[in-house]
Length: 459
Image (cartoon, rainbow, N blue to C red; front, side, top):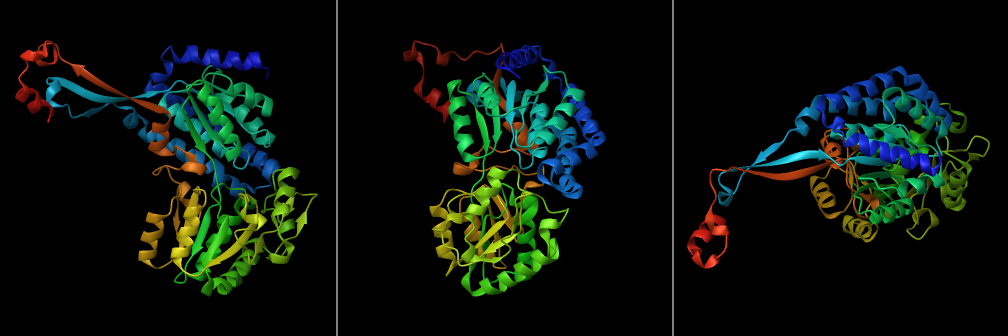
């Protein structure tokens, strides 16, 4: 798609938005129902596309992508009418007699730019929130997941006219062209490097943004933890989608007294969950492309690998790999791993761990395994992070009842459920002043105003 075609899409969407068609709540709900039905019809197509791009099993694709999207649609179908209602608030005495209220209103034309690691989920879920809030949308899925992008294009064309929702495929050139257009809101999920560029381009038009980024999400395991259960849940969260998850535990930071026991259990769990030959397992995914395959291999120090380490360049697969005796100076700790490599570091006391985590960039997620309630309060209160779990990993994002997002280096803004509706809405503050009373004190000349009277109204 060339620049003129993209400009035309944005222009037509803006014209369509200003017809007021998307303000109708019933139309929003009808659009969501069409989308839900189409996803259900194409469920197998979605699964095949995700397998072609990332090697995921059909079960994992539904559990982590299609099923979550359908759940979000169902949630919005139940709650959009309530979210879209005007909310009356208290009116100050000085504004008597008036009605004060907040009116949720869509931004207009929004751009949703999504990544390759969960290509269906991270494109369609924010779209669901944008539609529920009453916007039109341009979707730009990643060029690294072309099979899923094509299924998304087919579904969107089946459900929507282009002036309502459109899909632009392609790579860097298309991204650049779109970011040069004037959108009313930009929602971006991806790397910090690209996020900075998105924010820079958005500043040209003073366009508000949501950035869903990533970072090195720590997994703290203290000496009171249930080591067997911790190992099981860490292995699940770390090696899901071959480690290519923005909220995957990036590294383990454990009490040195339980490190050996934890490592032993992690090795057992990897064998139990992925078998003795994970490179040949149909349920174990692959790295998205050669560039990332070689980047991940470059982070592995063979001298510190205590499990795994084997890879297949033909299938772009890397075994679930564990590294021990890692320090914060090692290469694997200098960037977000985004792959199936799990470094293990130790601390002497929890204060040391908290101080170290707070000295680093704010992570998108933090996980804590402990039985100590005081440690839970300390870590969740003193550490800065987007969201997380106590005694589990990953699952905090699988609900529409809580917002999901980071802050600082891990992003800004959030979505899912009501938070998603609010993200794509502007809340207008309105005072409806009645005509039959007009207090004279606010008008000049002020020398006629009684000071005590003004203090009474404004105290």
